[in-house]
Image (cartoon, rainbow, N blue to C red; front, side, top):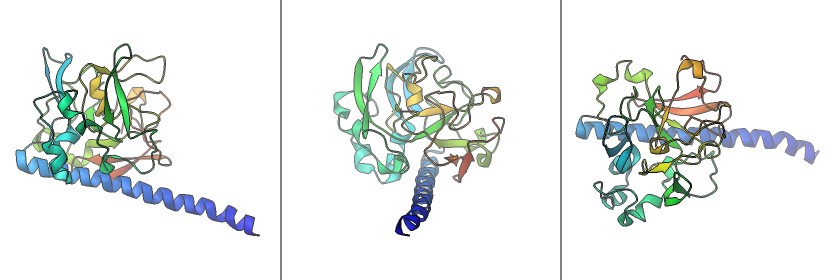
Length: 267
């Protein structure tokens, strides 16, 4: 009798725990949305997807690389951490050795379980560059590959972006802003930024390395690509989560939603 009761109880407990974790992830995204709009109130634009000099449009980034999450720190009750960043110096500069490895609870989904709170960013060929803190939330760069189109994508967050509400022509309630990625499918994800000269190694050997923008940004792909959340294609920059059948996201109006894995790619 006891064994039967335990067998009945465990699935119910697991469902309650997952529901709580999903709610917490939505709350994290809600707080990020409030911070985005607080930033907008201060600067009359949303933060850049990441900041970096470049010699040409859609060319390689020359740093410093700081991502949208770093720019939001003062609006996420992380003023002390923010003041430790010299935004004119590269993420990899020794002065940022402690800052870049700070794990922030708000950027972590409670359903995920990354191997460590940090990971090592590598250059082409695999040589280590630096360690950075892992995070679960990335900005939406647009339809196209953020590696190939860091400057000319059609999303809200891209390299050196200064997006205003009036620029969001599909409407803020219809446009993705920030979405989840889980550690098993996307182990190279951080709040810190697009580490200069880094690569995001593929998990699927059929694909090539992705570039630094994928550390903090994602893209939807075109409808024909079928790159819905938790798809089986194995792109390291695609949206994903440990939630059952859904992925949490933030829209540009500050609302949060659940996107089903079965969503129509055209939608």
